[in-house]
Image (tube, rainbow, N blue to C red; front, side, top):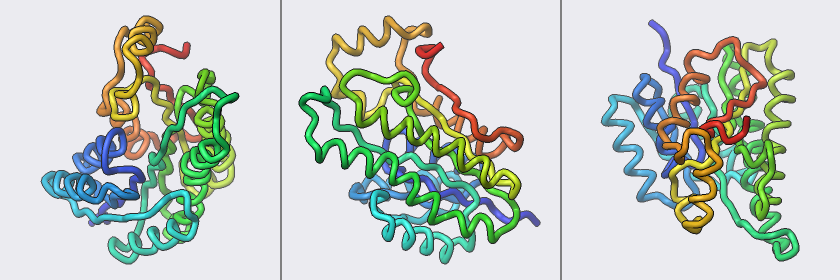
Length: 246
C-alpha cells in the first residue's frame, strides 16, 4: 500500500494558497496549512480539506523567520511522518515607485517573498533527502519577476530571485529525484489585486490576450500538475498569465 503524500502549502489561508491546498486535497494529498496571522481563515481551509476526505493540520509560522520555518517543518513531520511536496506561496506586496519606497517596505517584501522561499526550502530539504523517494518543490513566482513592473521594484526583485533560486536548486537536487519548479501568475482575481484602481485593471485587461484576469483555480491546477504528474519537469518557470508575457 502506497503511503499518502503530504503537502506543506505556505500562505494557504486565502487566495492562491487556499485554492492550491484544496486542489491538492482533491487529488488525495494530506495538507499542512501554513499561515502567519489569519487563523480563522486557515481553520476554514482545514475544514474544506477534511471535507475532501484528507487529513490536515495548521502550521502557523512567519516564513520570513528561519527558526519559525524549522520549527514548522518539524511539527509537520512529527504529525504526518513526512513531507513530499512544498509549495512556497506566501507573499506580500508593498508597492510604490522606487523614489518613494521606504526601506522597511523594500526589506519586508524581500524577507517574506524571497527569504521565505529559502527558509522553507532549506528547512524541508533534509526531510526530502532523508526519505530517498524524491519530492516536489513548487515556488510561486510572478510575471513581475520576468518582465518587471513599475511601482514593484521590491516585489519584482524578490520574484526574480525566486526564479533564479528555483533553477539553481533544481540543478542541485535533481539527481535525488526532487523536482523544483516555479509558477508565475499574472493578474489573478485575489485580495491582492482587489486594491488596484479600476483604470489599472482595465489597462491590464487590454494587455492580456485572453482579455480577463485569471482565477485562483487556474493557478492551482498548474501546481497540481507539477506536484502529481510533472515527474520529468524541473527548473522551469510556467507563466499563468493569459498570454500577457509572450
